[in-house]
Length: 277
Image 1: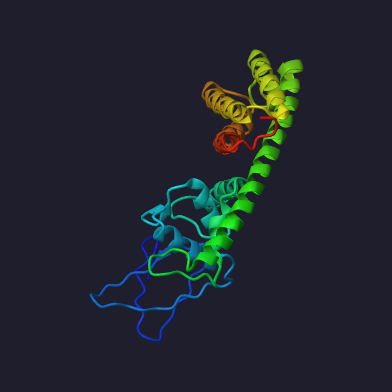
Image 2 (image 1 turned 180 degrees about the vertical axis):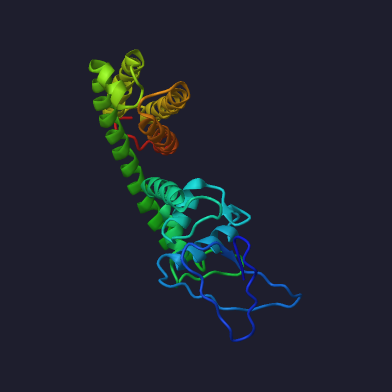
């Protein structure tokens, strides 16, 4: 076993063991040409079993590259409950990122796949698919229910985003100077008023419930523009640098989340599930 840093690797003989402290970067390696079998115990187990089952399931289904899921949402669902982290990045940052990704994935209905992988009684045939037609039927029914629930959550989230946008728009439009200062934009009152007008257009459109996918995409684009505003504010100077940095990180996360929500709403509209259409 090798650890990060200058510490020499630990070589174990049959019957020997070693304990790894929490959050210590490590890896297993075999320095011989012979096959090596070893046991690893995780205490407390937490969501590690789900992590392992889901990891192998995603690899089997061709949804990974070198073991890492192609979809960032699936990466969040994989990493967040297992308390497992990637080397080289601060753990608090990874916890925050994986938490946001996992939360967005659950709201958008990506968790069904992981619930299937996590079932210890799940059986597989020789091709790696479901064991029989009955199992497939049960799974399809469960996925259908989960998909409808995800559609409902997506519409509910769009309404929440609309309400928040409306409130923020009113504040920015009618109190631009104080709003700009509180957001870390300094004295850029004209910028605050412009963003407020955009929010006053997007917010009611999301609340009315027609064409939500397009308006949610507009919200994501506005968030992307605000990320650029925060980056520009940091570059040109602001008395509230910490708040501006937090705004940059928050808007970047919201841009990604709103974009995924827009995609989900678009699929709802294509199936004719959007109310009033």
